[in-house]
Length: 396
Image 1 (cartoon, rainbow, N blue to C red):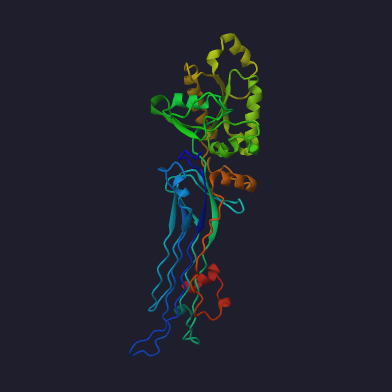
Image 2: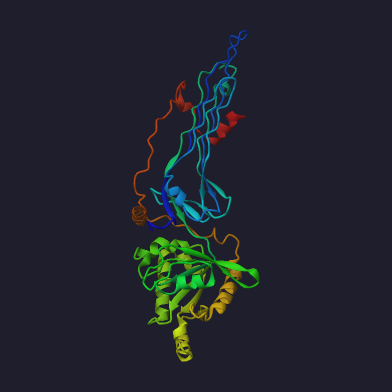
């Protein structure tokens, strides 16, 4: 993975901006010795915002920007002048990015569309100036509200590829070969296990200019859901696929058993993945004659469409495309909000630490900062509770 530019997992430190304090200024003019309070409000602190960008396909750019800090709001000033709002910090992420709290593993948000913006951390509201606290009996208030404090969090950003069809199979099942045959993708192909070390995407052309996206992930072995092999790291990339294509070689000892093993690993990783439509492809079928093919037909799992294919000779490739296109256009795959309906479970913290060590991202990213003296000129802070109703009432 060190030689690759594909980064699907980063840990960053995020900090929103704090609100500026309100001013306690008293108006003074040549002919107005008792002008009264005219302190302005403090500015709002900057937000941390995630924005989907379809021009990004990896989180590589965030590996070198590990601290994301929004601007602080400025303090209010005389003549009821409001402080300047803090600058928002926008984090551009590829579509399909999920954010988690790095300390608790809690799911935070999901960005799936281009241009979609999600406020990850909200900046503090600015404090009200003393002009808001003048009354008939308190004509010269010499206090103002402090701004709301900032928020900070260690955040895990995890990329889950958006594709129509996901390839599932053991190492050397022919997944990369199939992807290179039906699309313009050129994944690494070799005669040894775990040739694919990162997910690959390819656009598969269909009839009348139609197409769909196919995703290839590293091979899954028994126990992948518990961290064996490379499966645990990349299984999340097929969580969003609306269709799963299981691939089992024709020379396997028991095709049905291998299919059940793969299905069981998906069940352990995320039970909701079993709700997806599935297709079974028996690869390397060019080594079979008609008699062996008929014999294998009787041993295949029931209740799932299957096809015998060979990526080398092209056998069954067009039939496979027809089946995939038909399954993709079933009504069950057209439900609005299908992607959003996938439940994001909290991260397993034990697995989280292992993945962070692999990425070299387990170091402490906390930023030390010097706080401003926002509490000056505030007589009794207990009088200022940051309740939305009270705040908005004072604003009016």
